[in-house]
Length: 479
Image (cartoon, rainbow, N blue to C red; front, side, top):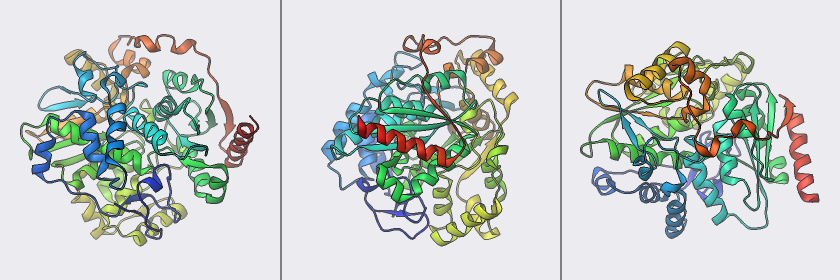
């Protein structure tokens, strides 16, 4: 299995080469040169597997040159049910990502059972163990990322305290829930640094991208990526689409629909890849909030993300992303893997702030099986209240976005799985506004608001962030 760039001008790489390499030399993102194909007979043999066993089967397809026994040990360790203790029921913990069925064949694929109560745990628990096993000892790697809260906390929990690695995480000031901020900034591991940027997530992400694309600077300081620009993160997320499908269907070959919060598009792209591999997914619903550039693109072919300073602060903050990083991968695939055309469109985006597909190109999007839905604050309140009243279940506002679109857009008679983002406890004000109830945090987070918070405050200025990264590297070397 080899990997190419979405812009078509980078040398071939292996999975091991790009584990923590976010951007190719030509500025593109890595994707497999071709997707592995899974036939129905193989799918039948996978039905009933544990999550860890299925992870080995799926992930090794993308890293065939790496030792399979080592993959088995990593997956077995990462996906022990005891690592995912925050499940809704005692029985669900055995499945890692259980399904809670609602009504009319709509189900909730639970992904928030991990140590930091977010879907990001499923990727980070694997990646930290992969690093420990295959990283060259004695060479420090600094993972630089931007987060709306959950990914950063998951990465810091997974990599905190590990040898030969540092985590530097940028986050937008005032754009997370109180719980998310407390969870992120209370990490006390000596190899973790949180930088609070006075700006939006898009500005944080732009700074991270610009720094990582400076290959000389990145090589000098040993920088790597941790956002969903990493192919390894996408690959790990593919697993729960196969697992959810195999747990949901009455027979292998039955079509399903997935409704996935849009966010940075990595989660949705993982679902798209599962479909390209042969998983019988009738439709992928990409669910957005008031920052609906992706919704407009999938309906019209025009992609016009808001400028960073116009990104709306909503009640589902992890979806407050105007320029989704992994969208480029989908664009590359749907346009016939035409790297030159992708580069042209992204050049238009950089110079004009938007691009529009030709009618023929838009027809490819319409035939792709990917559609969109959008919801707003009152919609989220409605769904959170409905889930509490009808199913005695609390959900977070991002999952409410997925449920709103999934419920209203799913085809009658076809099972639809709505993908969870985070535990409802991270958004107590939203839950209380919708239900009048207070969600009690689990025992290991009862003192979350009493913990000391440590962060470095910086302006939305790349030079300031570069200087801080250099300072951290110098301090580490001196120590």
